[in-house]
Amino acid sequence: MSNEEEALKGPVFNPPVYIQRYDAVKRLINESGSKRVLDIGCSEGKLLTAIRIHCSKVEMIVGIDIDKEILRENRFRTKPLMAEYLKKRDTPLKMALFQGSVATPDTRFSNCDFISCIEVCNICSETYGYAVEFSFIGYGPEGTENLGGCTQMAVFKKLPSIEISESLLETVQYGSYELVAETNFPYEAPKALGERLEDEIAYLVNTYALRSFQRDDEQELQREEIPLDYVANAPRIKCICKDLKLIREAVVKQFELTEDESSIILPQNEENDDDIDENAIDSDWETTALKQHQTTDCCDLDDDKEDFWD
Image (cartoon, rainbow, N blue to C red; front, side):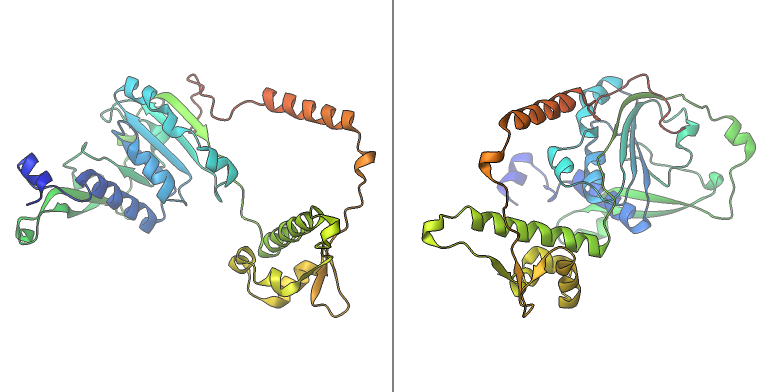
């Protein structure tokens, strides 16, 4: 028994059982390909953050809890990180927090394809057309496998042949939950292979050229060409494409090659520093800054907005 176990006078799970529960939920979401996820009894919203980070195909994550105060305290979990603005998602994502009771269903969530209830629901009837599978989470030390895990997971899968009766739907209310926070995350649809390749090549060549032009002319270190092999073997280029023919085609669309087609002729910096209008630069900068200041933050919350599922 470890020192920590002796201090706590019992076994210590590594990773903690709650993390093992989160891992099980994330695995099921990814395996099922679910895109609209609802977590009932989300509390602080830690599972919502884990789903956002590790389930990249999910497009909507909603947390519901009865405690409005704890939801308001954790609204930051629905906001993008700075890194998520720099490296945008490939798919859209909307996150929201609602205050409400699991005992009072809301029709706005009837089209979710994955619902998690951690430490909320233990028993469910097959009356509503679900097949159920049970599994253990949090096994004890070696030699105690026969005792099972310290907690169970029940996975309910809707039977395709069962339809919800109209009488049951009539008992479900619309808008019974109150919106606490809502955010649309920045995303950018993935570019085609050729476009991504052209962008990376342009960035690589222009960066190489800029460094060359900034060198001291007296040292005669300035180069006018960049070997095509250098571009083709650049790590960022190789991650996108390893086909030299496609790389050459992407290069020719933007840059001129040498006669033997072994190198790229670097673009020349024809702008004269003496011709730069500093007043125009200041004006452009002030205009840009003003626009940025006037832009509405996409993370601003609108507590009165209720059209999330409309």
